[in-house]
Image 1: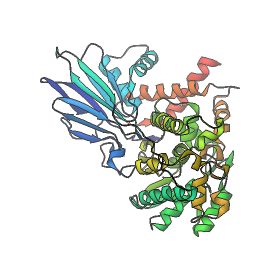
Image 2: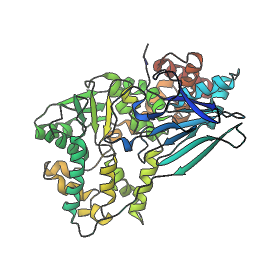
Image 3: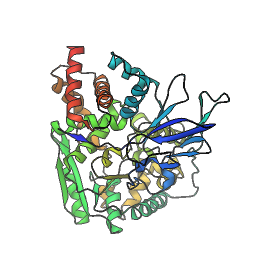
Image 4: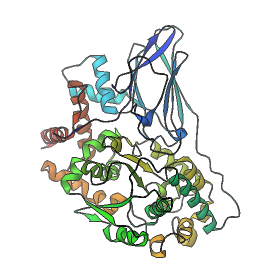
Amino acid sequence: MNSYSYPTLLLDVRPHGSGLAAHRLDGAGQDGTIERLVVEEFGRALPLPCGDIDDCNTIACTAGRVTIRTSRQNLTPVRYWHQPGTGRVLIGTDLASLTARAIEHAGTRPDRVAQIRAVRAAIRTIGGGRTVVFSRDASGDSTDVTETVSNTWKASPLTGEKAAEAGARQIEVLRQQIAACGTPRPLTAVVSGGVDSGLVAALAQQAGVLDHLATLGTPWGDEYATADELGAHLRMPVRHIELSEQDVLRAIPETVRMLGVPHHEMVAAGVNLVAVYRRHRIPAGTILTGIGADYINSGLRTETGTAPDLQRAVIQCLDDAAAGGEWSGAGAAAHGYTLRHMYWNTPVIQAALDTAPEIMRHRDREKGHIRAAAEALLPPHIAWRPKQAMHHGSGVQRNLRGAVARLTGLDNVDVESFYELIATEQAGALVERPHEPVDSDTCLEAAVAAYIREHD
């Protein structure tokens, strides 16, 4: 059996006097009403996955109102379900458990799969930089929901900077954030041998907080050689984490649960690290990544040409990323890790937004300003190595669809429909056994059987 206790917050908001009260349903907190919760702690006093409380989402119940405030990063998306015809609202971070509890309140029906899908469609996800207020309506019979955009990214490019100066400024901000995140130990940097993860590792070593280096590979690809070059430069061994096709496939259910409503690209991007957590080849503690540097330094724009307004394109990219849940530390926390994406916190993002777009294209390369400044910390061949996302370097992006097809025994698989079946199985398991861990292998097997019945 491969079950795990998934970190989640689940609140039941009910009428109380002339206002509302929020009660914990997830079993992690004390009985009674709550006043204020930091979402990313999941009620377990877990270390925060970022450097500042302002980068986290919060839920507060004061003066008979419940207020959710999401950060611009929106590390762990918050969702809510408003029970039709009543003042009751359920608020949660885990779509599977939120769906199951909504069905419990609504009353189960024989057509369980259809009911799960209908409830999931009725659950609303709060985006980044929002304030959502739940309050009693004038009649006192229902609950009003008011959502406003409260915090957005603003670009204020500095003038007169040279490329290396802009890169050095960003690296200094990154250095400060890494130096402040040295707990819990041990701390492992997951590296590819490129400039982004290479900078994270080098700065962590300078700060005296780096304990291990690790890199991962699959039967479809790896970055062992380039990661080893970085390790040689830092004079540290690199742990090679070899993931089998089965390891990757078995990590899909937890990845789907973490994402909630996954697209294929998001699953392919997230499943690598989830498979690493499950293998426990990295000591429990803090994991640092270089993921996110492309989002904040225009690296993603080179695939489609030059955007007419690069700053606006980057801000839109940030907003889109904040809506997906791929930055959540919930999957890591389920296995005893604290995950920190060092390029995905407010000071580092703002430092990038304050960089003139033309500076980012120094030497006609994406992130050219960072690469130029990185030569003070890394060998030039590492600083200027072409970028490659982790799921591309491991071959997962190209091969996951085929692996799922082999799992089902079918020639072709609509993987997003398959992922939806997994999510349905997870919610169904929690409907049947709301207080027991979900067995991910059982959900995967059931989803395979269901997909074959529907498509064979």
